[in-house]
Image 1 (cartoon, rainbow, N blue to C red):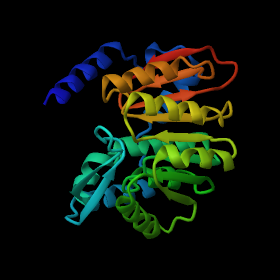
Image 2: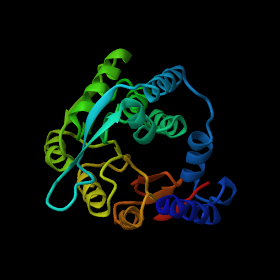
Image 3: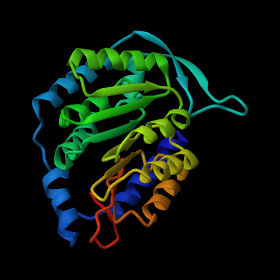
Image 4: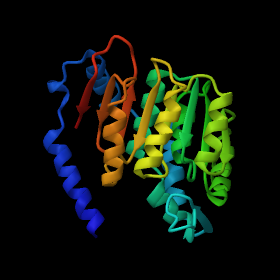
Length: 263
């Protein structure tokens, strides 16, 4: 209950500070708003993903879920019994957020996409279907949810997804060693200050000026807000955009460093 009350206050603060497109003087960001954020066209593949998410959210299939982001004391993880429906409702992106990811990928056409936090694979499907020529590497900590995600990828017949299972801190360094530039990264897991900041720092070593980094749940907690504020200040970041659920980082040379809160 306390967390929900804090979220309401964070959202009200966001509304008070957010601008519409009419208050934006950056051509790059204005184009982002009018051509990506405000686009309401829903491609066929997104409709299929909506239907899959709805089906998953109704599933009573029981899984033992390993959560590496909520260990207590000396224990690095916790175990929970959850239905696929509970996981889908709580951990999968809703259709509006997923379709925004889809539009971002379709707009910037990355060759290499990195995702931290696969869950049931809904966000991965939005990323992978937006640019079928891209290579998508997605990392999930829990082996049981990974299996459900693999089933979903197979059902869609996608060949451009490589899924890895394990702790982000163990797998990410190896992935970055063998990957070229990270053109698009979506960070949706381990929603805490230190890990979020660390993963962004690691990914920024492999970006180009045309890369995009999206961070989920930037207002989830005081720690996530602190992490978001600090990564926005990194020298490589030219434009940072806060749309409440997501934070987006852009790195294009020639842009004046600016931060935008956009409704």
